[in-house]
Length: 104
Image (cartoon, rainbow, N blue to C red; front, side, top):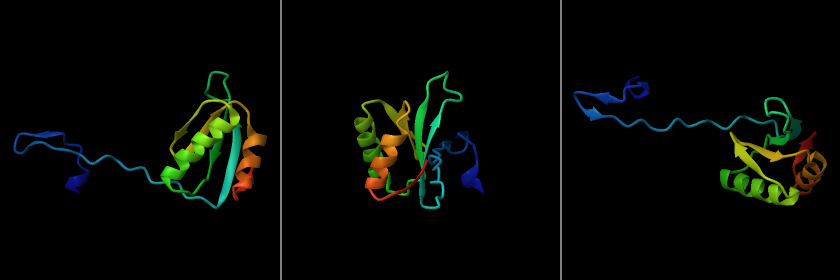
């Protein structure tokens, strides 16, 4: 239980380093979901891609390639790829070509 303590400094031992909290990858049913979201984004919409069960490096590379495909920006947050704008059709076609089962 001592490892889960939030203690940052102790007079007995000095500074205590905490390991970074590791977020576990969400479980997936094998279906990649492509959605368009506007809520909470001040009117700017993004296309989100979730449910990809590939290694982290491949996920980063895929995000980069999909942004290039759409000619727009985006990001990778908590294993969800966000692409600026509504590009569902283009992204679904590309992901299916890569062998993923896609649900729009």
